Length: 278
Image (cartoon, rainbow, N blue to C red):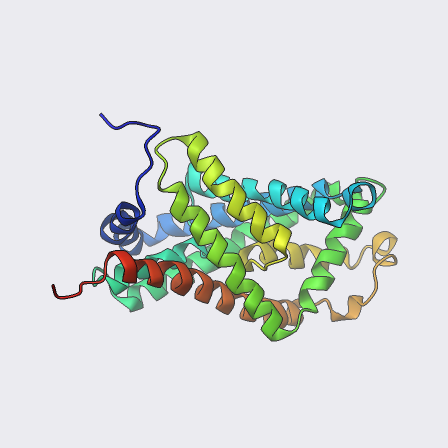
């Protein structure tokens, strides 16, 4: 009987991902995967909206660093929901490359699943965007939540391409490490702690997550039409669907792939699973 407090070692995690988890994901029922992807998009959006609410007033009272820490702590709820409740997240699915490198599945099948999950994540994110916009909760704190949401969106579409790319790399390096470490634990509490610190670190550091941005930026685009709060935000002309895709989603998604598929998946495959011919 396994000891629930004993962690799996990195070599065991790599083997489990390659031979079991990622193979099942690649060959899974597309309709079920798409629904799970919608859930993941919504779960990450829950973390994003909680972050937006949580940071209200923290910076002015406790300083910039504490505001970033609190935002990251709140956002970590999103990946906890994905991993523990069960869902399919594009950034975490970058780990599927380990099965390709190990010869268990084809790269084309993994790409197909990535595309399906990415689309599902977008749908789930937009569902939360609609719920938050329709709920009027952005009016909280005298409209401060809406102003914060708008400022976040505007800032994200104005990041230079290569800066957005490298922020995407740093983000998914940490996100995939969070998923990787969560697999080491056999109990829920262990998984929560494994997820919390890397996710808090990526958000507090200012890195960029392509799926979270599917919530942050579309919500900002909707709120742009609310004069009561948009009058308090500058540079709104740069916030639109074109800038969302071209200025943010493309470079951040590419960076996320490099961060997760190379810096975590490929390097750990090389260390633990690559056959040396000995």
